Length: 125
Image 1 (cartoon, rainbow, N blue to C red):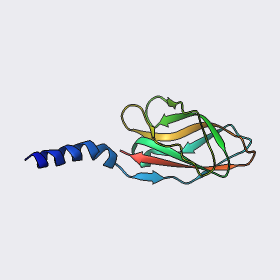
Image 2: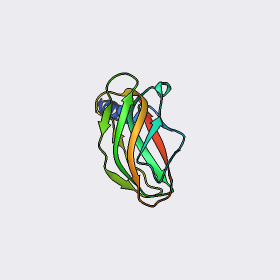
Image 3: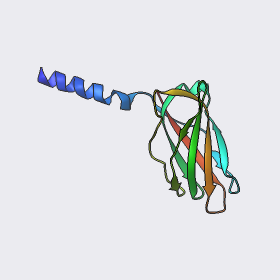
């Protein structure tokens, strides 16, 4: 009986981690002379509760993100972080319940003077 209860407890605690799959969107090129970009996500992706980035090609200073939901007010995320080519942002939790996102506005600065590619991965609810 204790074993069954322990197994059930483990499954309940692991459920959020097993929720939806991670989906990689098409890479977007960030201009070396730019300071902002808009990454389309779209309602067809469904509700999203986590995301992460991967940078390739240059070092990028990410100064801020604003999630623009399909419905509702924009959700600002402050993630000041510098990522070198090949590095990932790590897990970024979206505050509140999962939401369908129309686009993601990114405030950035490239320090290497050459373009970079950013790949967004989203975790569906």
